[in-house]
Length: 210
Image (cartoon, one colour):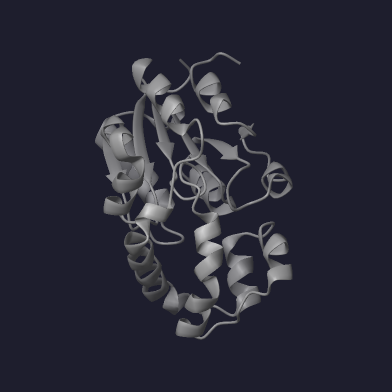
């Protein structure tokens, strides 16, 4: 077993929420007065980090907490529309059965995360929900302190460039998934420790099977 603790992002990593996000993006844009996203722009934005997306859409940083609260409330209301990626439950069970400890660090709300995880929610011993857009590093370090597991024995799994940046700042290993919001070439260009193209690869890497 290469890692004792696996910390997962939620949206785009465990849960297939990107279509929902895109579907309500322009409602958020209208409400908080930033530029709407045209259909032809979506693919290009999936190659950008969070700061570049904010710059292109004209999102002011001081609005981020309000936007985050609104999006969390909307997703909580639509939680029945969000589902785990196929094979995610089996992967989590495999890790737990092998003795890997599991945690979630996410911008989404903990009740929503637990609702989507369903029967798999009990596999996680720690949750950090409602994390700010650029606040993951501190939450990752807190997970290390809470669990007593040092950074070099922790792997973080996420789908965004900011996940990678936060993980590196926390001096932990990062595994990038290619089925979330950020496209594979953009993640690969930043040389993550692992680049996962299929869900089962996560357990294989963590358990030292590849």
